[in-house]
Length: 439
Image (cartoon, rainbow, N blue to C red):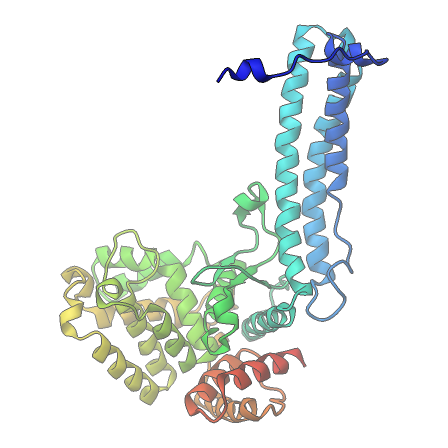
């Protein structure tokens, strides 16, 4: 079949006024004007957020969160407006511009589009985060905010000397994925065009939010931010190497633990913040197939899982929770017997108890000027007397009774105990957990 022959001949259309300009060389000024108008509307359309835009309840972003983001947006817009004015000036005179001017117009157009895309990234990123607070999960996320804030308050109030108050406070949001994560204050994010994140962000997957007894990861992610805000990020590897030298342990092993310092610190701070519940939560996360849990990597930033749990069990012992530590160790040894440990290189396993104690000495039991002359274990420590409060709180969660002045972070431990006791359905514990945090 001859396809071309089936196409009808176009009917002659009477020209309209101005139509010639759209099809002749005179179209250039219109192209330039459209380019300038589009660029200006793009940059002015990405407005600042209003303080009441995402609700006015306790789950809404605070004024300081909104203001911090608006500063980011305004800085990006100012950079873009400089290029926008250059584009508008050139577009208005393009008829008189030579070839170099037309080439510059295209360069400025491309530059404006790139800057507009960066500004839109920032605007969209926080629009999505803040928008979650007016949805059905807003009160859950507010609960995570309160736990994160409680962790910060516990540490900053325990310092030997006062430090400047970090602000804005951590902000939680929900995102798909297996594990929680965090973006530290001041870290440059590709999502923000490599600009600095203005406040700590704590990402929590839905499956963790719906199972509050699995939220031991929240103190872990908050601890990453504490280590950063307390300016311990660069210091800790050196302290670990020094402790290994004092314990007369090989430099090769010290290098491994120095590489692990961020994740190991976050774990240990989690134990100090919520006690044995953190170790149970950690076992839930890293207790995978024997092959995967014992797999060692020379590049991993997390301690090898089969070592990671004993590290935190040992801290429990040194905190005075010997019975809990023994119970966890028996369970871990049953899951991962000695034969599984053979997958870990001999030199990594050599003198492991001494390595663990050296790491604990460095990260938990050595004084730092950043802590006001105290050690982390003196700044904040879950104590056996706190365990009694947690048990009482677990009974209150089962019945929906007010938990009173109990620190918010302890509710994670209380939810775990309530789940183990089986006196209330998981749905009841979940509901009462978030209702308690919402009071």
